[in-house]
Image (tube, rainbow, N blue to C red):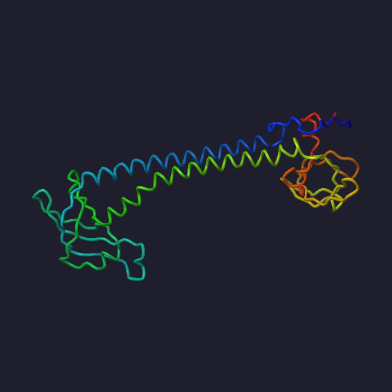
Length: 255
């Protein structure tokens, strides 16, 4: 086996690293899936938000009498909803509506004959909302599009972080790292699938350097007796990346 390893910085592309493009494609697919889900969520929330805004613009405040209130037990009222059966007059017509949602603690404090304020949409006079509850809910909903937009930015940032991590982990050691002959502390490389880590060492100017090394056991490393070729990670000198024969041939380092 003849070596033809250029001095750093070496020309290395992400596409030359076995498996790197597949991992990048998986990251792209995950990012696209997350973006699609966020897009659907934003579309749904957008329509809902617009409808809420339209209701708030059209609705009229109308007094009503409570016929009956329904609330969960006192131990279960925190952040829970109750309902009201109400009687009110709108556009000279009397309406009796059951199940108007409100806060549970507010419903619990109302008895028959109590007065409440409703918001009534003239186009749907039989579907009122308790005024304070509806306004509080609308104010919370106003933040949802911003939250979904922030989620989309987080997904994009996460994908960018994964690309940067892949580049620094797979390419930078090959381009800029010092190449060393690494000796596994156990005398052999780990076995199994996927990526494995193991303790190892190499000598530089007769000084032993202890490191942690990463390799893929299913790929044959470039060997020199009991040693394997590895690249020291520039930003983390205590880490090395084992170079396998397939990668070395793709890079043109061995013939």
